[in-house]
Length: 170
Length: 162
Image (cartoon, rainbow over all chains, first blue to last red; front, top):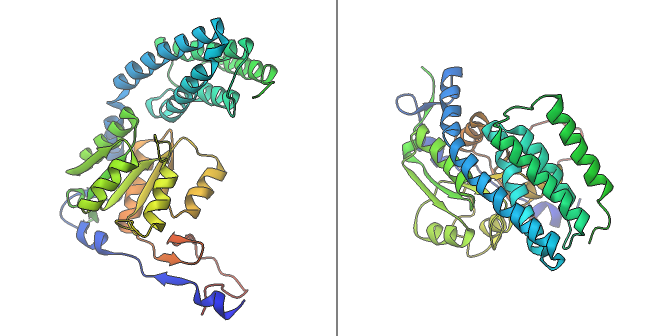
């Protein structure tokens, strides 16, 4: 190791002002929350579930229409793909938070399928539409948790379809 | 008596274009007692706030319109015009694969939280940035919180030793 290299490392002490200002023994939230407090906190998060269902329901309908339009006119496939990219990310990010981990799983499958694509063939658009339909059914039927063997089989089938029609990727 | 955090004394900035995600973070912070929480959809608006107000903690999504969360972090840590190079940043993202975590870490992220997240995970990241501030490392290629979070004994020479 050269001297020059050694001199180039500067270690700056931790900034403790925020800690000094806020950590105390009188007011605020316990640093170590009790199971009851954690449950209350989780309920706060779950308050947004209805908004999630409404928003994603609307996004699913809009994106489905984009895909249907692209099936009819392949010139619109890039727009449909962008819609699917946005939808897949939102559902993947939030599904599990609101007790819909199945939706997160399907969104991941959709995300993988459309990764690095700028166009899609008709069959590929239909695979995207099947993902959207599956998401819609889960949301509409309020299938929380990981579902039954039927739902898991559906996810496996979607993954197989995605693999089968993955190429060409452009 | 257990130690507490007075969240009313902390100013938060939430940068997230997804309304539901931003609302969840906002509701969680409000429940914890935070009274200074601002929400913006993109880094451009975030910089405007950062230039005019004191912000103690930033919670940002990776996927943002225009400049993404990683570019935002890079500007915060490395730009000479950065309003606050030391501000703690918690990054929320559904990009949870290892390469994304590594990339964020190497640009100076303070905490990383993979989506979908639960309240407990978000709270633990908040506690971490507030109660366990880390020293900063400044080298030719990195500026940010110390990435050596675990102190493991090592027989060889320490590259940081002068």
